[in-house]
Amino acid sequence: MNEVQNPKKPFYYYYGIVFIFIFLFNALLLPQIAKRAVKEVDYGTFMKMTYDQEIGEVEIQDNQILFTNKEGTSVYKTGLVQDPGLTERLYDNGAAFSSEIVEEMSPLMSFFVGWILPMIIFIGIGQLLSRQMMKKMGGGNSMMFGMGGSKAKVYVKSSQGIHFSDVAGEDEAKENLAEIIDYLHNPDKYKEIGASMPKGILLVGPPGTGKTMLAKAVAGEADVPFFSMSGSEFVEMFVGMGASKVRDLFKQAKEKAPCIVFIDEIDAIGKKRDGQIGGNDEREQTLNQLLTEMDGFEGNNGVIILAATNRPESLDPALLRPGRFDRRVPVELPDLKGREEILKVHARKIKLSEDADFGKIARMASGASGAELANIINEAALRAVRDGRTFVGQSDLEESIEVVIAGYQKKNAILTDKEKRIVAYHEIGHALVAAKQSNSAPVQKITIVPRTSGALGYTMQVEEGNHYLMSKEEIENKIATYTGGRAAEEIAFGSVTTGASNDIEQATKLARAMITRYGMSKDFDMVAMETVTNQYLGGDASLACSVETQTKIDTQVVELVKHQHEKAGQILLENKDKLDELAQFLYEKETITGEEFMEILNR
Ligand code: ADP
Ligand code: ZN
Image (cartoon, rainbow, N blue to C red; front, side):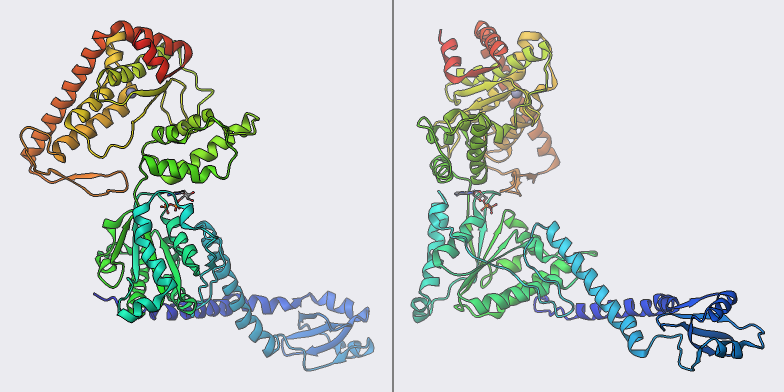
């Protein structure tokens, strides 16, 4: 592995580019500029100027005449014509004869125009481009673009006073990082025993779970400088820029030690090097430089590198080996308690009314990340302002969950009467099947107001607490619930619509997972037929079995979903009168709450 490669090469590139630029400038542009300094006029003008006594100095050359105006500010030239009395006439009209009117610029001038000016222009263009690149990347910081030696300046951001108390939940991650803080406070304690801190710590988890916040909080708690850069910021237009930025980053960090260096989205540079043709040179050089820097400083020098990623499996193994990013801190989506705490942390900033119940909101927003929860609070505050209230109430919070998760209400999307009726039956179908199966979560609210996300209706289910395990029956019931919408359409209208596409997708996903990953099929026992590749980003799975088995899997998935679909239909048929009554209610009111739903159901 060529990890310890020094990217010297690029600097020659820059010099090369500058020289080519200057050469072209001299060859093509300079003559134009030089010529323009001498104005060419016709002989008549020359004669006229002579008679008008406007000529200062004149030089008669072999094939042309050069002359200046009286003030000597501009130089003219004209062709030579047979003109016997020329010299006398010029003398009579007060022209001075000279042999020093030069067509070319003075050497100093031409050096300036030919060499210094293009260099200034070139650097100017470079600056401009790099500024624009920075802006595009959302950096907006004071990164400098220099030539060759490239003094990329990495901004030293204060930790903005973020502390662990600002990061709610994530207790395991905090515990993990507490050691680092202790070390930064008191490195001698560790040195005495001979323990060395890990140089690099990888924060791994889905987007918006607070990885950046945690890194800042470590710096805030330890009260040390915080250097932050995003992986994508390293990858620049020119090969070699990224590597020199890494070098500068570490140089500055070492000067400011003890400190925290945070690299966000490290997968942007740390992707597995595959050695393919057309591979990304710049990225690999940047990665090499990062590895070199990490090896270069001895442990215990007080620089701790934190990096964040949501794609740990795509990282280069060289990054993860001991002595580099050898410690992994998982930062998971918050559980119920975590969600409640995050809501409370963010609610500190807003004015709340008495009725706000974060426990309920947290339960409604199951699966939401910290960033989404922060967004929910903010949307609620915005809604309160829109409605001219001075406090944020529970209804604001509930509506903003729907906004964040399902999109804004689409006020001007008009469903036809028939469509509205179908959507009402569809959504009630889901809810009724869910409610009738004891293991499914009860519904919180159903609306058939179209959303900007494209959903026509929306059923919010509430989980009573956290589920870490799901039984086979629970998953089957969930599949039945997904098919309940379609089943209701079939029963009420005898035909089907496209409205169930998302349900179909979800039901299939669950059924497949049961068979290929959870060992819940009758034939495959505890054999994994699929492996999950992208755990933190949706969890794509790839099949790992023979073609024959795939066929069997497909058959079983179809069988499973079909069976649940039939079950859902059965449940709805048995409760046909309730289905009609509830659908009518929803059709008229457009929204039905969980209590109203249960009240009608149990009437
Ligand atoms: P990541 O780096 O994991 O993508 P960030 O740290 O940038 O996520 O978090 C984005 C925002 O989400 C933060 O600015 C914060 O407002 C909110 N947030 C996320 N997790 C938490 C948490 N555990 N506690 C409080 N706020 C959080
Ligand atoms: Zn549906």
